[in-house]
Amino acid sequence: AHHHGMSLVALNNALNDNVMQVRFHADARVQAAELLLQERSPQLVPLDRPPEEHKVEETPGRMVQPRLRRYTTPHTVMPRAHLLSNGSLCVMMTNSGAGYTRWGDIAVTRWREDLTGDGWGAFCYIRDVDTQKMWSSGFHPSGREPESYEVTFAPDRAVVRRRDEGIETFTEVAVSPEDDAEIRRVSVTNHSRTIRELELTSYSEVVLAPHAADLAHPVFSNLFIETTALPELDALMCTRRPRAH
Image (spheres, rainbow, N blue to C red):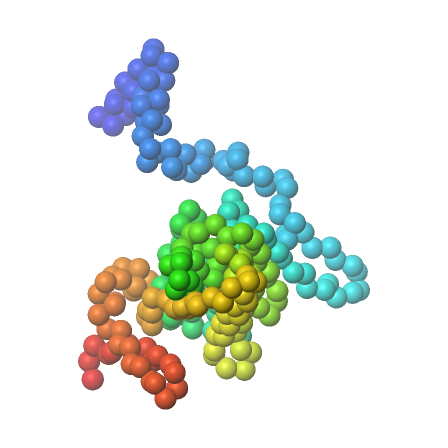
């Protein structure tokens, strides 16, 4: 029955100018994944001209110096990723400010692979108390277009610099080579001629479980996360409550 059905569809396509194919590709869900239906290397991806950061010139007998990667926009065709690790703690960050933190096979922060959204990670919101305008230290998660934007990926750190409403934010992300610690520092500079009052709020979704387990049941996984405030250390401590003693 399956083969007879395919033969009838093929005959219909031959007699009516591929009518079934036209109907199939008119569906928005199919249009979103048309590159996967080519069965070859996608025609729209310029594989013959790789990005400049992938071109490394090697000199025989000499060590290749590490090169910085700089991006002046978060709107690249594909998210540009950067990895920082000390062997056990790994931090991934994209040129839009998104990313994840993992310790071994444990996901510290929540992450979902999404080429279009790319809005998961550890963030810092910035709000002007007087004007009530809000943006973030990176492009995500606020999605607000900055006056200027630059991301620098170096072997030892990732840096995001942006300017909004006369306020420049300089965000540095690094991983300690000795201890399993991720360090994020946000520096704020006021370039305007008036005194500004700003609120900075950090945000991330804590997982503390294998990524596959969180992917299967994210809401259930959240039930076991406990957060404790430590005022004497000006810190928050997140722990996962065990299911049994």
